[in-house]
Length: 389
Image 1 (cartoon, one colour):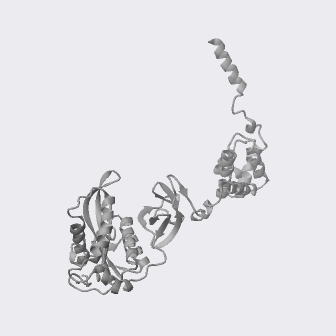
Image 2 (image 1 turned 180 degrees about the horizontal axis):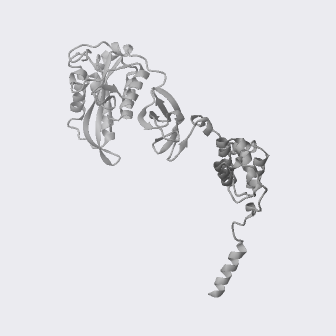
Image 3 (image 1 turned 120 degrees about the vertical axis):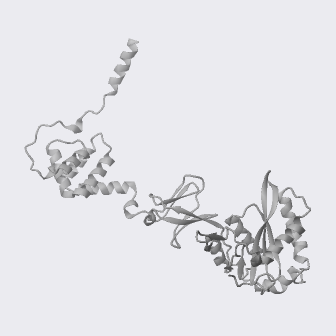
């Protein structure tokens, strides 16, 4: 149970600010009707308040309004008491409450303590509960605004010329006077940089070492493949967190379908460029021996994709060993079986490379085999068809 001061109890200057939202109704925004909410943050000692009209209660809107409230006050209270809303508090299946991650980081940045009101306990934030009612009755009651911009302009004027300078019914002082005399100096100073508003979401790391965020892909360390990580999306950056530590940071991609990749996030075997991988494969095959080098040269003259052949021979060298690859290449050339890396693989799989080399048999040189017809044959066929018609 909360032990903080409630309704009817006193607060020290700068001790606490209470936050709440109130429904203002429908107003015209960009040519359509939108529901509008009043955000109110009230300093409990002086009753000096910051008001703002917003279109939702999402985390960015919530934190942005608090940030502007701190800037309006010129400082930060020691404790911040919001309502039990999802922008500030998350509730798990067992009913244990946890602060929303970015709200908690926001409070850490400004050096204030979060202290959410208990569910269905309006006395925990009685100051701002009463303030919401006061604004809705005093500022908007009887005034039929239709457009949001008109309501925003009137609220700013009403707050400065009426709410802040009225004699408060409990303190018997004007809120602006109490604030200037005692509370302004008691607030903690604002940090040198404002908190960058962001959204935290949860994502599973894909097999390609990336997370999918807003139709773009951002790399994370390969050791996290299959894990669920927290992604913080701010106005300019994407930051990925695992076990409370930042494991990746990227500039926010514009557009859709973009891959934002840091090569260091891949395992060592995946960090090389395609040209370097090809070069290393050739070196691996050539290192097997002169017969492997010769066979590799023959492959350049065949109808195959050379890179695919090299990759297959390199895998065979890794699987069976360089000595076995050299024997297999020697056997293939001995018998004139020059039909690609597949032949070498068959020799190795069947263990034929360990057999002694018999006298060579007469075999067709498959490297010179004609795998296609000359274009003149197609020209002759087309001419014959034309004459027949």
